Length: 315
Length: 253
Image 1 (cartoon, rainbow over the protein chains, first blue to last red):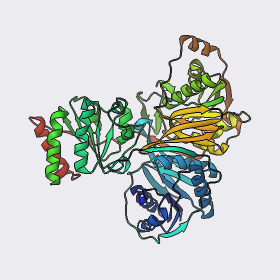
Image 2 (cartoon, rainbow over the protein chains, first blue to last red):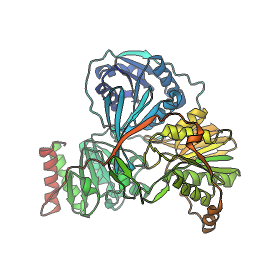
Image 3 (cartoon, helix red, strand yellow):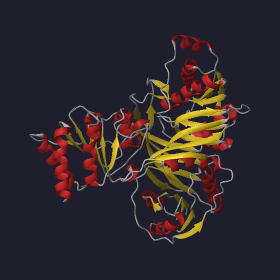
């Protein structure tokens, strides 16, 4: 029976959805699941993870992002508790911390798995490489196996767990990071990587004002809004909305690609979405090769009606 | 400043890559310096232009990866190191990191620069493994780097915004795509690069441990089920039919 540690995330004192996703994913591997949660409000929010199968949850309430120290604390925890497998979200902090823990433990690290499966004592993982042109099936060979998992790629399921919260010591004395300033762009919208539905726009919107159509539809669906690199570079929207190989990778249940041709770099960032809707006037646009439903027409004629129809359903 | 730049040779992202028999077929594919590594190299050159010093570019890969070093020379690198790994395994970041550490042992660099991730594996692990092994700071996804004496400030992309971090040299920084626009090498640079020596080492001679990640197979991506183009007289009819399908057929809205 493997000992599996899942790293969760907390934001504004609330557990992020990915925390329950990681604990659920750990549970599917079998074995004993514990969790680690570091951030402001972690101790108060942690017990919730017991409902998804976590036995022990190790928490620290530091509000500072101190990756060197957090990685060290997690590596020490892995040694102390004889953890075999560490699962982390492939998020900003997950992909930053995982290789650091790997280096401290001389452990193999798998990045951004979209499928994980137990085979003997190994976690066999799959991930797309070469911008989605190939899928690799691979595993870590070391005693401790570290895996970052693409957000929204795993089912969330409730499982009984003790949910016992214990303090995790994070010693920041040797921290190499020093934060000078922070500029966060607050958004009322659901985080892109956690959204069930994402509405994205590309150059077909013609100008920055066209993005209003994307926002209107997203508002109705409680969806995240995304963008192609082209319109980010053009300055129509903020770069935090960029979806693609650079920028965010999303795996929502439903993805709207509006006025997006479907360059390979964009497809790499959204190709694992379950349902893809494309609206584009160019019938040869590559986006139609991956779309579940396509409309070949002028988006300026399609979007107002589409939005009205959705409004009618949502009442 | 003595600067080390980690460069990786990767297939052009636009290249057609096929998978068959459990292997990726890269034969005949155009190879380039990974785009973010090229940005890291450009940044190294800009830092050197201000502070003086030397730039060493290092790559781990097959013999053919030396063309990435030729490009680095043409852009402005002073020294190029190729760590030859004939059985090149692009997903075992740990081995690549260890090879770079061994090949540069005894050298001291003030700044190590690398791209945020290579566009083939998208792992982004090598800089973090190296910095942790060297016990130095690693600031990732930098959109701006300011070097002032031994102080290095980096404006880094984080989820939902930007953060400015600072650390003292030696330091590792990874380049995001907004850091700079890499220069084109001059013809003179390209000609001169052809004559430069490349310090070639073999990974087998460096005493690297066992691989930490192994591949079972490479497979083609699962075909998405054929999509449906929604028919209709007018755009409005199509929009209505689409919403109907999403709501009543697949029930996602």
